Every structure is written in structure tokens, then in C-alpha cells.
Length: 399
Image (cartoon, rainbow, N blue to C red; front, side, top):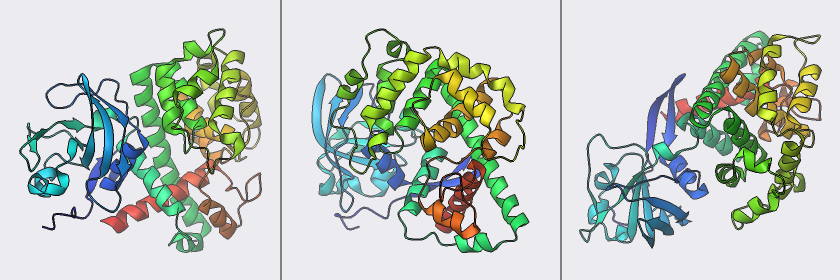
């Protein structure tokens, strides 16, 4: 084995809610690089507490995976390299225990817990602490894998196969997109239910709202803020969003982010939101029974009455445009079905599509479909159906 090169990054097939999906090791590295972990109670093998102060520099073209990470391990602070694997046994399977290139590793982080206790050693004989990441993830593996697939596709100049999808007879294409949209919907409801079970209704609503306001570059700092300051703090007189902004100084991404989507503006909007409706999660829950009703044509991209109802109940009036639609489709509707059992798929699938990957606009043009604002795809069901179809195609190509 070449001591200076790891084997090709692993890809593991995992059984999800709706069939198998692939989870590449690169996705795990991306999660680590972005700090998308809840390490408030994390422990390594042996029981020592660990906090990730800085994930290190992502060593994309070499080894180990991350250089010069900073960790609080037990009562001390350590600086060194971090190596990530899907399985604990990959350390020895890849020959790292005899490879001097890994002599600076101070932590071995793995996705899945080992079936039996393992000992991870460097070439100098030192025993490495191991950290299992699966319990620390803020979202499900399937959601991370789908997001990675979409981002990969968004970076390509074109998406192979979309022309073939567009060429299908309209009835067959619509049936295909509806099937994939339903699968995506069930996944979102499942994740909403998991979040409610873990956090309770109020905090699940709050965390979801901040996460969506942080899409897509500042999601993780927003989630850390949600963990540090519960909803009750935002409703407290004198609380300032500036305190939360300062706590994540150095972690915010502003380059390439439109001014209206920058974190200071979004947190200011959320502060106004909570000031107007400090009990907005309870008001949102009360809307559940009305979701099955229609106002006029059920095929309309957005339901005007319900749209106004969401705005009035939550006080979310300052957040408009596509981000409001994201709040409804990625947050409010999945949360409501998970909480109340109301059947919200029809509402969700016909709701106007919010902010989404740019490549979908071209596909909308290809089909001749336009949303309410220029080239936006027509409905959430259309967008999610196409995304589901692309992700499934990508999965099959990987196998």
C-alpha cells in the first residue's frame, strides 16, 4: 500500500426509510468540516468528554483528512490531525497503524459504532481516542446524502438525463415526479417527528425556523444559536440578536450571500418575528386541522388563505419571497403533519416552490413551466419530484 495515499473514499449503501441509499465518506468529511455536529455531550472511547473547537483544514488532496484541528479533550486542549472513516475497522484495513503519514493524528472519528470494542493505534504505538459521530448528527443520514447529491448536481454545467425525463409522455412524467415527491415528503415528515421527539414542539419549531433562515451557507451557526439560546430567551425583554451574532463571529459566511439572506438580517427578522408572536409554535399548531380544507382550485401553486394564516399565526411577515415558501414547505407543513397527523402532502405538493438549486430553473424552461416569479419551477411537488428522481439516478450510478 502506498503510505501517502488512502484508498479510494468509501461509499456505503444504507437501508433508508424508502429503500437503500449511498453515503460516501466525502459526505462525512463535509459534515465534519462544516461543524454540523452536536458535541455538547460527546465522549470518546474511555469516557473523556470532547468538544471540537476547530475542525481543522480539510486536506482534500492528501492525508490525513483534516490537519491541525483543535479539540478540548477531557481537561486539556490538543491540536493535531483528525482521520474520518465510516467504520472503525477502516483504520487498520487501510494500513494507517503502520503509516507514518498518520503519526500526527490525535482523533479517529467514525460514523458507525463498532460491533465490538476496538483499539486504534498509530505507528508509534500510541492509542488514539475514537469518537462515534452518528449520535451527534443533527439530521438523518438520508437527508445528508440527498443534500450532498443535490449540491454535486448544482455544480455541474448540466444534469445528465433531465432531457430524457422531459421527453417522457406528460402523464408518465407526472406519475414519476409524484412518486418521488411523496418519498421526499415522507422523509421530511419523519425527520420533523424525530426532532419533535428529541426537543419538544416549541424548540423543534424554533430550531427548524433558524435552520431554514440559515440556508444554505449558515445553517450550522444558526443551529448552534438555537441550542445556546432557547425560544424563551428570544421572547425575553431586552434580548438582542447582536449577542447571538457575536457568539458565532468568524463562522458566518457572507461572501456570495445576498444582503437579504445574510445572518444579521435574518436574525433581526427572527427577533421581530418572536416579538410579534412569542407563542408562535402554539399558534402554528392550531392551524393543523385546517390544512385539509381547500380555498378554490386545489391545483393552485399556493393557497392564499393558508398563506395569510401562516403569516398571521406566526408573525413571520418580515420574511418574504422564496424564503417564506421554504419556511412553509421545509418547516411548517412537515412539522404540522408530524405533530397533528393532518395530511398535508396535497398542500405541500401544490405550494409555490421556494428558493432552490439553479439548475432546476433550466429544467422548468425545458418543460415550459414557470413559477410566479420568472423561471421558478411551478410547485414544490415538481421541484421535490425532480430532485428525488435525480438523487435516485445518482444512487444507481454509484452502485
